[in-house]
Amino acid sequence: MEIERLDHVNIVTNRLPELVAWYEEILGLKPGPRPDFPFPGAWMYASEHALVHLVGREGQLSVGSEVKLKLEHFAFSAKGMSSFEDNLAERRHPFRKTNVPRTNLVQFHLADPDGNHIHIDFDESE
Image 1: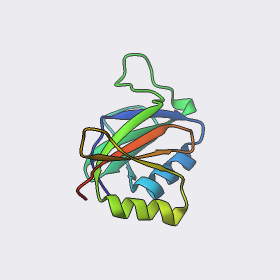
Image 2 (image 1 turned 120 degrees about the horizontal axis):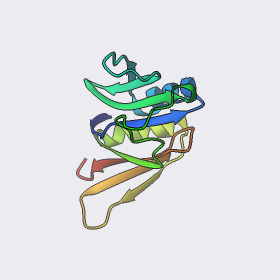
Image 3 (image 1 turned 90 degrees about the horizontal axis):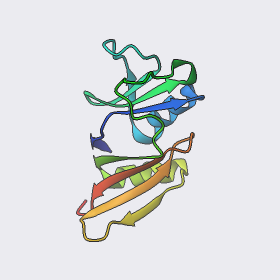
């Protein structure tokens, strides 16, 4: 799967190592530094684009930072639907797959270990 788009998301967690491992295994994101942004935690990347910032509970973000904290739902736009579905099936990770009415999108709905709801949009022509 190749992630094309996601607005920057910060997620505060008590289980930083577990979430880092999950985002690597299920979504294929890789951790990397962001030295220009002082909050601790793990930045998760796809290609050059910073997608998700996982913040350990001790690294609470302050008011006025570039914050979208603990979202209950966020959406990726991606390519490679069949490889993503195969990855989920191989790992026996639960998901729900739906066609979005009046669009050409197929959405996969799943949850990370902290219960954050994620949906990933694919073009149905894939």
